[in-house]
Length: 172
Image (cartoon, rainbow, N blue to C red; front, side, top):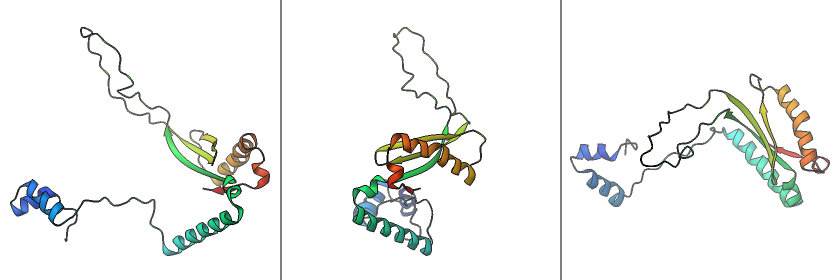
Protein backbone atom coordinates (compact mmCIF):
# COMPACT_ATOMS: atom_id res chain seq x y z
CA UNK A 1 0.00 0.00 0.00
CA UNK A 2 3.00 2.32 0.53
CA UNK A 3 4.18 2.08 -3.10
CA UNK A 4 1.23 2.03 -5.51
CA UNK A 5 3.61 1.96 -8.50
CA UNK A 6 5.16 -1.41 -7.65
CA UNK A 7 5.13 -3.89 -10.53
CA UNK A 8 3.82 -7.45 -10.53
CA UNK A 9 7.38 -8.68 -11.17
CA UNK A 10 8.57 -6.85 -8.03
CA UNK A 11 5.75 -8.37 -5.98
CA UNK A 12 6.48 -11.86 -7.33
CA UNK A 13 10.20 -11.52 -6.59
CA UNK A 14 9.59 -10.18 -3.08
CA UNK A 15 7.14 -12.97 -2.21
CA UNK A 16 9.11 -15.63 -4.14
CA UNK A 17 6.06 -16.65 -6.18
CA UNK A 18 5.40 -16.80 -9.91
CA UNK A 19 4.28 -13.80 -11.94
CA UNK A 20 0.97 -15.58 -12.66
CA UNK A 21 0.31 -16.17 -8.95
CA UNK A 22 1.10 -12.53 -8.16
CA UNK A 23 -1.27 -11.46 -10.94
CA UNK A 24 -4.04 -13.72 -9.61
CA UNK A 25 -3.67 -12.42 -6.05
CA UNK A 26 -3.49 -8.73 -6.96
CA UNK A 27 -6.19 -8.70 -9.66
CA UNK A 28 -8.61 -11.46 -8.72
CA UNK A 29 -8.33 -11.72 -4.93
CA UNK A 30 -7.46 -8.14 -3.91
CA UNK A 31 -9.23 -6.62 -6.96
CA UNK A 32 -6.55 -4.02 -7.69
CA UNK A 33 -6.07 -2.66 -11.21
CA UNK A 34 -3.38 -0.38 -12.62
CA UNK A 35 -4.88 2.97 -13.60
CA UNK A 36 -3.04 5.87 -15.18
CA UNK A 37 -3.43 9.34 -13.76
CA UNK A 38 -5.50 11.62 -15.97
CA UNK A 39 -3.46 14.38 -17.58
CA UNK A 40 -4.89 17.85 -17.24
CA UNK A 41 -3.44 21.01 -18.82
CA UNK A 42 -2.87 22.77 -15.51
CA UNK A 43 -3.77 22.63 -11.87
CA UNK A 44 -6.41 25.24 -11.16
CA UNK A 45 -6.38 27.34 -8.03
CA UNK A 46 -9.71 27.45 -6.18
CA UNK A 47 -10.21 31.08 -7.32
CA UNK A 48 -9.55 30.29 -10.99
CA UNK A 49 -11.77 27.21 -10.80
CA UNK A 50 -14.59 29.31 -9.31
CA UNK A 51 -14.22 31.91 -12.07
CA UNK A 52 -14.41 29.20 -14.73
CA UNK A 53 -17.47 27.62 -13.12
CA UNK A 54 -19.14 31.05 -12.97
CA UNK A 55 -18.34 31.67 -16.64
CA UNK A 56 -19.75 28.28 -17.64
CA UNK A 57 -22.92 28.84 -15.63
CA UNK A 58 -23.38 32.23 -17.31
CA UNK A 59 -22.96 30.62 -20.74
CA UNK A 60 -25.53 27.98 -19.80
CA UNK A 61 -28.01 30.66 -18.67
CA UNK A 62 -27.51 32.54 -21.95
CA UNK A 63 -28.10 29.34 -23.91
CA UNK A 64 -31.30 28.70 -21.97
CA UNK A 65 -32.50 32.26 -22.79
CA UNK A 66 -31.33 32.50 -26.41
CA UNK A 67 -31.32 28.88 -27.63
CA UNK A 68 -29.48 27.64 -30.71
CA UNK A 69 -28.94 31.18 -32.01
CA UNK A 70 -26.54 31.69 -29.11
CA UNK A 71 -24.47 28.64 -30.11
CA UNK A 72 -24.34 29.79 -33.73
CA UNK A 73 -22.57 33.00 -32.64
CA UNK A 74 -19.68 31.25 -30.85
CA UNK A 75 -16.30 31.14 -32.60
CA UNK A 76 -13.46 29.18 -31.03
CA UNK A 77 -9.76 29.58 -31.73
CA UNK A 78 -6.65 27.62 -30.87
CA UNK A 79 -2.97 27.51 -31.77
CA UNK A 80 -0.58 24.59 -32.34
CA UNK A 81 2.86 23.95 -33.81
CA UNK A 82 2.97 22.01 -37.07
CA UNK A 83 5.95 20.68 -39.06
CA UNK A 84 6.66 21.85 -42.60
CA UNK A 85 7.24 18.26 -43.71
CA UNK A 86 5.76 14.99 -42.56
CA UNK A 87 7.79 12.00 -43.79
CA UNK A 88 6.07 9.33 -45.84
CA UNK A 89 4.88 6.39 -43.77
CA UNK A 90 6.21 2.88 -44.37
CA UNK A 91 2.76 1.76 -45.51
CA UNK A 92 2.41 4.63 -47.98
CA UNK A 93 5.76 3.73 -49.57
CA UNK A 94 4.79 0.12 -50.39
CA UNK A 95 5.15 -0.93 -54.03
CA UNK A 96 4.23 -4.03 -55.98
CA UNK A 97 7.37 -6.08 -56.64
CA UNK A 98 8.08 -9.49 -58.12
CA UNK A 99 9.73 -12.07 -55.89
CA UNK A 100 12.88 -11.82 -58.02
CA UNK A 101 13.02 -8.01 -57.73
CA UNK A 102 15.83 -6.58 -55.62
CA UNK A 103 14.82 -5.52 -52.12
CA UNK A 104 14.40 -1.75 -51.82
CA UNK A 105 15.76 0.08 -48.83
CA UNK A 106 14.06 2.97 -47.13
CA UNK A 107 16.08 4.95 -44.68
CA UNK A 108 14.52 6.36 -41.58
CA UNK A 109 13.84 10.06 -41.96
CA UNK A 110 13.47 12.60 -39.22
CA UNK A 111 10.63 15.10 -39.25
CA UNK A 112 11.70 18.50 -40.47
CA UNK A 113 12.96 20.79 -37.76
CA UNK A 114 11.06 23.64 -39.39
CA UNK A 115 7.82 24.41 -37.61
CA UNK A 116 5.15 27.04 -37.98
CA UNK A 117 2.39 28.05 -35.64
CA UNK A 118 -1.06 27.26 -37.02
CA UNK A 119 -3.93 29.30 -35.66
CA UNK A 120 -7.34 27.85 -36.39
CA UNK A 121 -10.74 29.46 -35.85
CA UNK A 122 -14.00 27.52 -36.18
CA UNK A 123 -17.68 27.59 -35.27
CA UNK A 124 -20.41 24.94 -35.17
CA UNK A 125 -20.44 24.75 -38.98
CA UNK A 126 -16.70 24.11 -39.34
CA UNK A 127 -13.40 25.87 -39.97
CA UNK A 128 -13.48 29.60 -40.66
CA UNK A 129 -9.78 30.44 -40.82
CA UNK A 130 -6.50 28.51 -40.87
CA UNK A 131 -3.58 30.91 -40.53
CA UNK A 132 0.11 30.03 -40.40
CA UNK A 133 2.23 32.58 -38.56
CA UNK A 134 5.23 33.50 -40.75
CA UNK A 135 8.48 31.87 -39.65
CA UNK A 136 10.46 33.97 -37.21
CA UNK A 137 7.45 36.04 -36.19
CA UNK A 138 6.80 36.40 -32.49
CA UNK A 139 3.17 36.16 -31.44
CA UNK A 140 2.38 39.32 -29.51
CA UNK A 141 -0.84 41.10 -28.66
CA UNK A 142 -0.24 43.38 -31.66
CA UNK A 143 0.28 40.48 -34.08
CA UNK A 144 -2.76 38.66 -32.67
CA UNK A 145 -4.85 41.82 -33.02
CA UNK A 146 -3.63 42.12 -36.62
CA UNK A 147 -4.63 38.49 -37.23
CA UNK A 148 -8.15 39.18 -35.97
CA UNK A 149 -8.57 42.44 -37.89
CA UNK A 150 -6.92 41.58 -41.20
CA UNK A 151 -7.60 37.85 -41.49
CA UNK A 152 -10.40 36.62 -39.21
CA UNK A 153 -12.95 39.42 -39.78
CA UNK A 154 -12.71 39.13 -43.60
CA UNK A 155 -12.98 35.32 -43.32
CA UNK A 156 -16.11 35.62 -41.16
CA UNK A 157 -17.60 38.12 -43.63
CA UNK A 158 -17.03 35.80 -46.59
CA UNK A 159 -17.82 32.44 -44.97
CA UNK A 160 -20.51 33.34 -42.40
CA UNK A 161 -22.55 36.20 -43.85
CA UNK A 162 -24.47 38.14 -41.20
CA UNK A 163 -22.60 36.67 -38.24
CA UNK A 164 -20.70 39.87 -37.46
CA UNK A 165 -23.92 41.89 -37.31
CA UNK A 166 -25.55 39.38 -34.93
CA UNK A 167 -22.59 39.61 -32.56
CA UNK A 168 -19.71 37.15 -32.47
CA UNK A 169 -18.82 35.47 -29.18
CA UNK A 170 -15.22 34.26 -28.83
CA UNK A 171 -14.30 31.20 -26.80
CA UNK A 172 -10.55 30.72 -26.85
